[in-house]
Image (cartoon, rainbow, N blue to C red; front, side, top):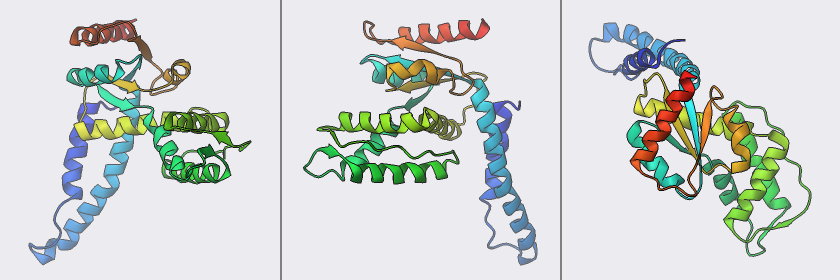
Length: 238
């Protein structure tokens, strides 16, 4: 496995070539410059795929329970953690479905068709298999939380956790590339994942290593973050 530090260096150098200016300069060398740029454009995707594989093998998942999750995520950034809102995937789909509900406050066939279309397009973009959800009956949904729960239930009954797992890993990759993460262990804090799904999701995310942090009766402080990361180190050594 190529280390992240080497890959980040290669990605930065290749990106410079991929973004080089073709126009101007000696016209006799333009074809050569263009060939170099096109080669770099192709290589950058290969490097990013390799980076993704290496990131998945160095990532360690931390999932929070309790109202202190948001603050935990904010403080964890100071310890070079990548922080992802795991609930955003279902919530965004639910918001789009809710916009079609009008005043009836009912999740019915129209919303189901809208959800299926959104999910199909998303699955194609992310290159994952897609099984259409199964519609049963109209359901009352008076707020976004209820619509989100309906959406989550419909998706997971037919597709399991593959969509949410794909979403989290894609978000982690984008953040890691943006922040040029190159450490040997990459802590990834995932917020707003339903507690009943956390165990199974942790076991399949990245390399399947992670822990849950219960914040219901704890004050979220930098010291708590430090203690959590020390626990991560012990788990990795074990």
